[in-house]
Image 1: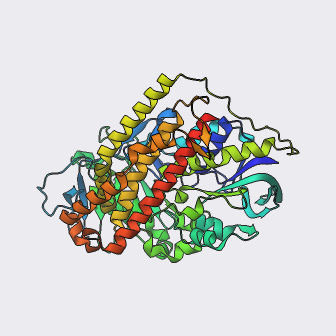
Image 2 (image 1 turned 90 degrees about the vertical axis):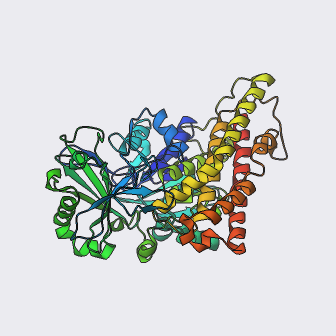
Image 3 (image 1 turned 60 degrees about the horizontal axis):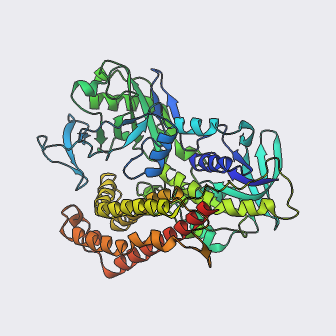
Length: 561
């Protein structure tokens, strides 16, 4: 019997396995696909270029967890080419025009002579050299291969009171695995649709799972090998939008391994398919020709476009549920992820839900996958260790052990560490409004106009909370100086104090800004939000603060153990 069974070998599942393994906690991971990575999918084109057909970007200033992981793993990254201009093709009978992108309004300038701001189109996005599969390879290579079981599809989970049983299906048939706890690192909708639960999940949890859209579920991406980066000859960065009704790719970008290299060397473009799910099936045979024609219209035949590779995520039931297909029209909007009902223990701590869509910060992105793994690690560590040491607990091949306590430090060292933490939080407070505006502009640039203010405020605050939790993970906490009384660590009030009043201050500043913003004047609900919308925002900010306070207290207690 395993202590923890992880279902799903995407970034969330692998990061959780990596964390548990480092703490010598028994685990096993089951992945239904014959590969690891989930929605991370890197392909190699005919000219040798590695291109991502799943997530390709991360933003260091907004995604601290993925940025730290990239650094810790020693992976190389490149900045997404971005000169602040977009090649717009809005009429198939006219030549495309290079126009400056205005991040403040989320729109293109009307004149071709308008000044451009480098970095405004992609907001400082970076890509991994060799593709995002480098994350998957680095994490999985550090884990015992025998614990990474691929081609194993979970069909049913049954609670037996002291443990759970998992009914799995592989090429040889069905098999049953026992575990004290199971973690579903899957899109919630996919888990709700494909897995049977006995007993049935609580109604509010099932409703939350079904109401959580799967990011990228109905998307399709194309990668095109090019013999020459013709856009560089023209002094362009390779960013293009195609908005006319016959568009095949609606957003195109330079996906070359060396985007700063000479135009004459082999390169690549990538883009999001503009056609809907039904249209993609209808035109599947002619898609390569249609893509080749569109690349030619954008960058000329000099680009020497080759045969594209496509991946349609809507055809993968492990990513796209029937509810996602039914709500395809809403797929372009980034929903507010992190429903509290998806983050609590089920079956008295024997069942947990994870995956990027369960994260409050970075939900849907790679950052959200890591945030989910971090939450689960904090929630699982103490219960798993207690269960493994309980009288009469069955032996496992790898017995859980508690990490040895850190050497005791003196009061002066602790005081200095807390002072440095407070200074970093204060610096974050000073950057909070800038982070709000950045989140706002990012949403506008991606045409994600639903709940703009609400999502931007949550994103700004939760990024600060996430960074603070990372700081607390390394905070010296000698056991003889920091008692715990009634479940509260003695340092908890001190680490929360620098954040006091921040949410209210940021909300007030955001509302003042919105009222004078030309960009938001086109969105009256955001430009001058009514009282009910402001109350909804306040409730969400309060919930985020409460979650941070609980996580901070738990983080300190774990550092003390």
